[in-house]
Image 1 (tube, helix red, strand yellow):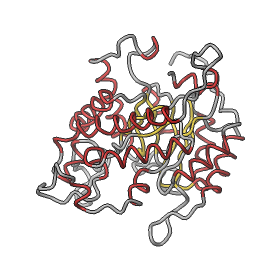
Image 2: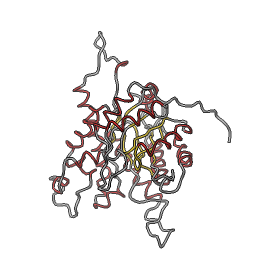
Image 3: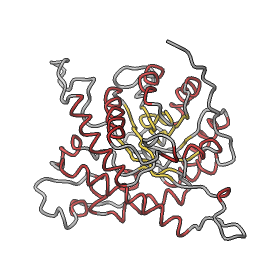
Image 4: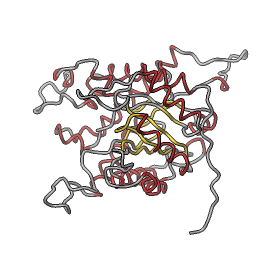
Length: 358
């Protein structure tokens, strides 16, 4: 399976929110703990990533719902699976295990999907590759709960709660777990601080320099493809650390990503002008997975699935996107509408980039 070949021919659909679906299970403290952590010394309710170990059937089931809805790419349940983020629960030592377990949950969901949806075969009995729509696992790498560009102390703007090397070390461990668990691509997402993202990129490059894939991906690069997705936090059109969209793009393009895009913070209506801008400057594929509108007064998302589907259909018709899906508040119903709306539309064509000496 080569995700690049799929992107050349069609718009791919990425899944929706994991947290939204977990909330539907109304889990309690004991559910999060499971048998293994029943005597853990601190509360763990809310540590959704832990469920990949204690309630793997729930995580696999959510992945399966998104696959059934039409998702081509499912994200691992690893948004906070780093030693830095897990320190909130004193579970730093579980970081590697969490990533391996989450990747295996996603892979299991795909195998279950394949078993229930046999791939078409030709008259000779061989798999008909022309009609196959392979599914991919994206290793989700979140932004961390600590930032390299901003001080958590308003009285000491030069203070940082973490160093670049510490962030690289945490991401390196996560990447190792995701790769060992069998992901197909690595997704650095919800980037509000570009320096954190650059640490993740550095960790990926460092990992694959030390552990190149045998023969590369389909005989190509010795590393897994990298997807990058930033977050524009408000109407200013900037990330939380102050970069414009173009500045953000320029800052991370040295990673030679498979795709660059936006997710979270905004609904599709608010994200539209930023996706249009990104589609005009990006030399790689463009992704977009907005929230289900903006949150209401109760912090919930009200946008109907058909509305989200119509928004993203328009972007596809304009030729702006290659990968679409949903973030906070989106469900399998949202993903189904998105998939139905874009399945017959052509993907954005990659621009011809002239090489030039600097």
